[in-house]
Image (cartoon, rainbow, N blue to C red):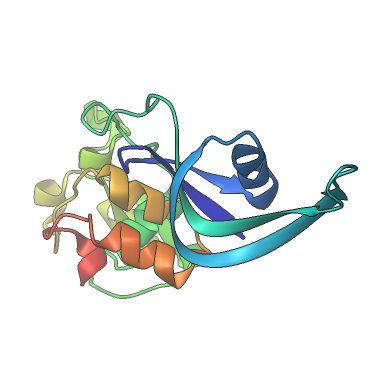
Length: 185
């Protein structure tokens, strides 16, 4: 289970472990919290008061400090898992929906024609379509794209990089996803 760590301004910073979240609470770096309480940690007893320390961790925390992620300059890392999720496991050529094991990262402009490995030049393709298209462009192969590629936003990237998002975390992130996002379909 991961905690969504945000800047004090509410921008996503990272997915952190429960243990990392406890450190933020213990060092009083948590400025605010939302979402459900997902864990309670019991510490030692105060020698003077006899009270036990208890830290309750919420699923989303806003922490002190200056954000180390700028939403305007961020270019999310490209991985097959994120790509397949962005494209909803749909082949960009035949429109079939496939399991991750049956999909490939397909370069619209292939490397053989000086294509690059970037979000705007890749789509999800099933293995047969990728093989059929080969080292040609979609136009050369007479295989039109069924959808256009796009670069995920900061909010989409946080959804794409975590497969086990809690309902309240997903609701928070989805509220900030652009209306044009394929994740809303």
